Amino acid sequence: MFYGEYRHTIDTKGRLFIPAKLREKLGDEFILSRGFDKCVCIYPKEEWENFTAKLEELPVAKERRVRRYFYAGSDEGSIDSQGRVTVNANFRAFASLEKDVVIVGNRSHLELWSASAWEEEQELFDNEDITNELIELGF
Image (cartoon, rainbow, N blue to C red; front, side, top):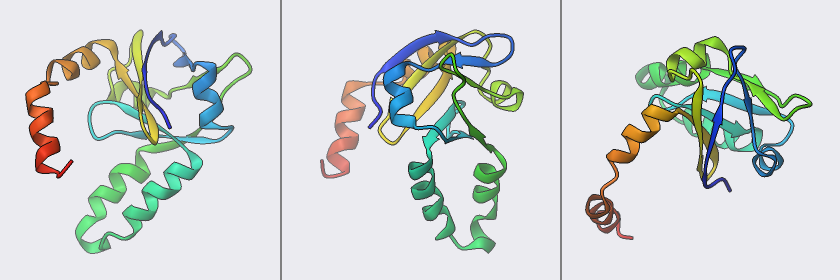
């Protein structure tokens, strides 16, 4: 399970250091994918398989754009000997990842946010709204 918030920098070649405890959970092979928001998601292989199994249950004729969004917007990733992952140029452009980034744990996967976009996202957090959402969901 992934949780927490980690601030790092991404270099001009798109390399980002992943903390050791997150690398252990990611494993040797993982998938980078466009996220729902302007972030890049990193899924351990097993979690990616779980996610895409749900995509495969969608009717092709109706949900083909959703499938294209995730399958075309995904790539395999690995960690180099210095604990870094290379985030390709398409992902960096999609999520506006330039220098300061935040790695956010989101249970089954990690999210990579530009520091400024993450700050904007956090401004949307409202305790009362979240409490009301939880109540609506029967929590």
